Amino acid sequence: MSGLEPEVRKITDTLDSVGNTTAAIGKGFAIGSGALAALALMISYLYSYNDFSTALVLNIIEPMTLAGAIMGGALPFLFSGMLIEAVAKAARKMVDEVRRQFREIPGILNGTAKPDYKTCIEISSKGAIGEMKVPSLLAIVVPVGCGFLFGPEFVGGVIIGSTICAIMIAIYTGNAGGAWDNGKKYIETGAIPGSGKGSPAHDAAVVGDTVGDPLKDTVGPCLDIFIKIMSTVSLVAVSVFAQNNLVDLIEKLFR
Image (cartoon, rainbow, N blue to C red; front, side, top):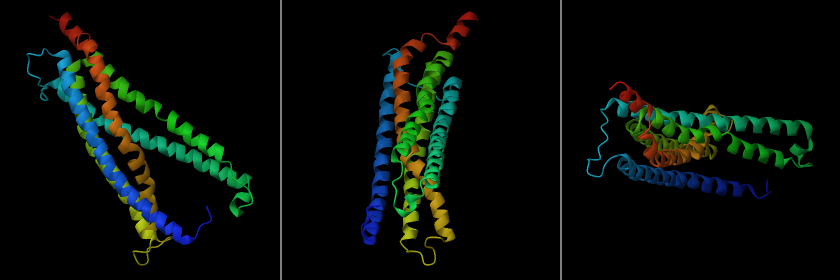
């Protein structure tokens, strides 16, 4: 688009590949910091509703804790699916807008007319903000709602389950997404004889890159924030739902 020599594109593609690799490494450190933060908050969480003289043990064999861990393990998958669907929705809107502009402004393709950048930017911005409402609320509503329904042990299990699964998913998405992106660039360099642009291998690599981008740029980084928010919200609210929850109320009624 800037009208530079073709050699410049080769240099920028190489830099992009290096950037994908370093970003994947950096995201690994980010999820590691999120896991350590969740662990530290978990200790504070246990102190918040237990006496300091008691042993800080969250027994995973207890039915409530185990049920919470199972539910917590499922949350990162639900959260990731929401994010991928959000990216797909925004991408479909963007493609429709680009096609409309090609259709209504013929001069775009031959360089005699400028496209409507503002509308595309608005679609991207609205999609980024609007589609994150439900996933963001998920990290806040689930621990609080589960706390008032099932008590602090259940929420403790939710935090443990979601943290363990989120670490694995985030590492996988960061590395796999970067690998798929770089795989497409590797094929485009002509490193594999007979598998340049237009070949079945390149078509498959484009599909992989399309899947890899939301994985490495959306799911991986957001899971880090997801477990931090859940741990923080749980720590803030545990002093309330530890004394006021549905399970304890039912037990008191049947005593």
